[in-house]
Amino acid sequence: MQTFNITSATTTTLRNIHSNAGSVKSIRLTNTSQSTAVRIILFVEDSSSNKFYIATTDIPGLTSLLLTEGLSYSRNTFTLKITTSAGGLSTSTPLSVIIQ
Image (cartoon, rainbow, N blue to C red; front, side, top):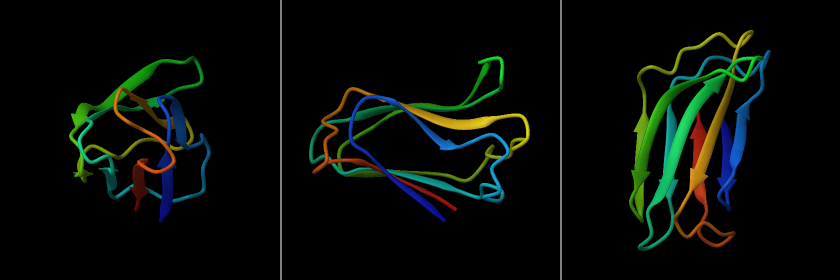
């Protein structure tokens, strides 16, 4: 299991290319803000910076999104990343990401 607390609008690498972390079975994204939605773009990217999108959506405040399908990708070819924007992301109201 891997965990991340994303506290600002940014692009975060969740798994590097050639990662030995194993396959991804699920990704839970939880917006801890009470009232502000967070926009997420979850994608894989190859070494030529080509992006292939897994999910693009707004997550309302105090809401979790559980992804369990379409998460298989070649760890030798792609990096798993997430871009966050909007929302009230901060150290006290992060977007919590759990990868299993």
